[in-house]
Length: 76
Image (cartoon, rainbow, N blue to C red; front, side, top):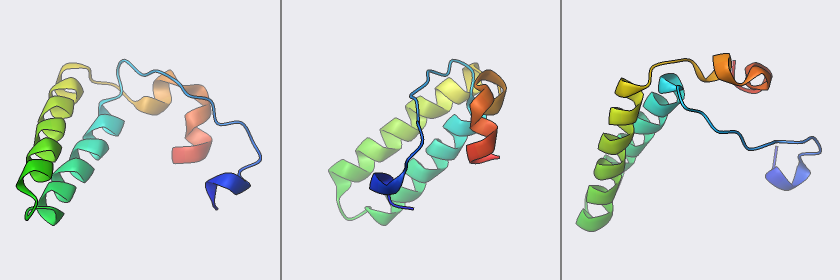
């Protein structure tokens, strides 16, 4: 579904203990750094972001869906 076709609310929420979601983002950033390895600056930025986010995931463990009740219907 295209974003412009979504006809239901998608509120933005803050998460302080969502290591599962953060770890998925870490994996995506790390994979992208390999894809863009020829662009050293961008690849380095992606690795830095992955490293920073990994520290967040390691320090604040918890499930994303446990803190935000409506997420289960979208992501589980």
